[in-house]
Length: 579
Image (cartoon, rainbow, N blue to C red; front, side, top):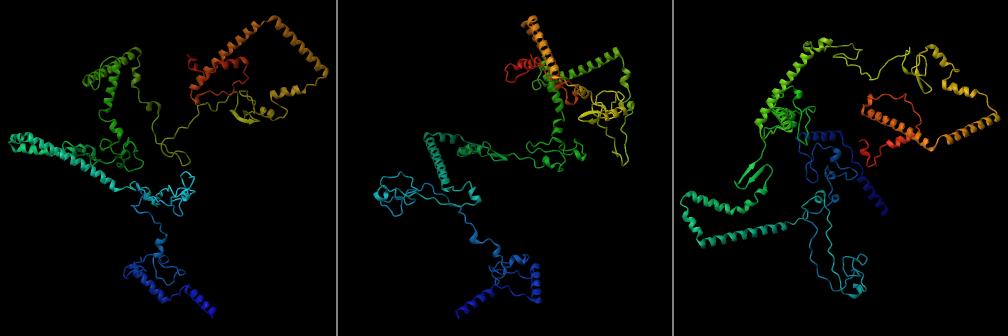
């Protein structure tokens, strides 16, 4: 019996989690009509379990609770909202670490669970920071340390961590207010004492009798007001705000506001291809209306360059330049000190300069002639070069406008010499350049035509150097006796030469010859350095081509001259070598 009851309860649980029954067509149609009416606003919105209206435009898969969670629940949005048990709680705005906490009462007896060394309840003996005692507080029962104050563990949110006023106590500000109130009270008592002293001396009575008119009374009241607000005006200049300035003497605010009709430079023309505006310097040098076709003189703003180079700016700069040049030549003039004198001098200088140019031109024409060439027709008529309309077919490069000139190299092109029909470098064989017309591999050779091609193609024909090597190889090998005899002859020749040198030439002659060779090498090195300096001053594209230059191993004298002439960067006297 108990097993059957358990089976029945299990079946009921399974039935409770089953998917709800399908609706009939009529029920489905009624449900759809009700949804349409709710969307149109003709029917009241559906209410969830908390009594809140559900937006009819929210889809069903969002508002309905899944059947495997609770099929009996009505549509709700509670499962879509943040759950309270999963929300992280943060500290309140008034919570902060306690400062200056007073020490509590220190216990006189050891408490169970306290530190065995010092007797404090807030830590154990392992974490005790006191010096280990010979007899701990647990056994001695004396010198028990007070408990440390444990601060609150705050959990701050994003704004709380970055709040600069977090932990500020408003009571601290009240102390400053009270301090200033005491200072004002002391000032008022001082003023009252001064008034009593003046009354006792009789100065105020004399001043009251001397005032006869109403204007005097008003003036006296203004003076009293001024004396009362004297201390307030001391700090009036320090409370300037952006856009206004407080004048402490006149007690008025002077506003520094720009004219509202002014248009920002970057709003003149919103085209991104118009004049560039530099936001750092707030400068727009070019004319923003240049692409619109408007005249710069008719526009309200035509760029900083137009303002800089318009009006008398250019003439002012020319006058200043003339003043500097005149001062260098001895005439004491200054643009700001003597503007009239400088203007008169500048005008007379211009007139004299034009007269001098005219006289110089006339004298040259009288001496050499050629005045008729100055009245020649224009260049377009002389050279027959005019701007004509050019149009090519669809196979050409240019359809409208002038044809661009073909870019040419600075080197000579297609120059044929020695009867060649192709240029040097048009043929390549075994790593050597040559002529294509005759297959010749020797530069500046005479063209042999087809005969040269046949001889080059023939395997028996070799280069000159290869031929020499072949001839040497074809010689018959020498015997050992002949080779020994040749070696002996060479040794005898060397011994004879060595004897002649020892006998004829001395060490002085050898040194003299070395010096002469070194002088020649030094002069050659100077010429080479001058040539290198000239080449370095020239443009890279204008330097000559040094492919045919001789390359050989330098001699000892040439190496010595190079070492002597070489400039070392670590040498302190290197800068004085060229002087």
